[in-house]
Structures are given as C-alpha cells and as structure tokens.
Image 1: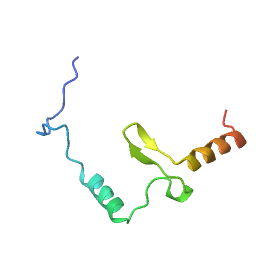
Image 2 (image 1 turned 90 degrees about the horizontal axis):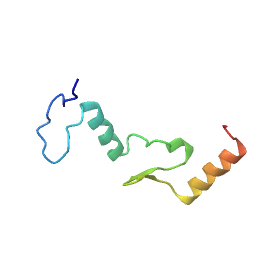
Image 3 (image 1 turned 135 degrees about the vertical axis):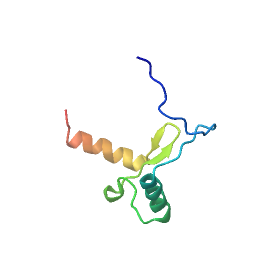
Length: 72
C-alpha cells in the first residue's frame, strides 16, 4: 500500500493553513492573553532552528534538580 498525500493545500511555499483553534491560540500568545509553556515554572524555552533555547540559568537549574532528584 502506498502513502499518498490526503489533500493538497494549494500552497507552493511549503506553508499550510492552520485550523481555527491553532490560529486563536497563536493570536492569544501574541496579544499576551495566554501564558507560554513553562510560564509558572519560571523557565523559558525560546524556539530556534535547532529546537529550543534556554538560558544558562535554566539549564543549570534543571541539572541541579536532576542531581537532587534522580529519576533513574
């Protein structure tokens, strides 16, 4: 059985149309009405080309936590 694309989006630049709920979430993030992931942990993750960027403070904090509370 061959895998074929279900439906072409008609976009030649590789972009796609987001569903309404995804557009609303992105707009809420832009407007500051929705807190980003990890907001309440006081850790940040900034998207970049290689995944996410975290400050040296956040990385050190995570390493310390892993040493203090090893999960196996």
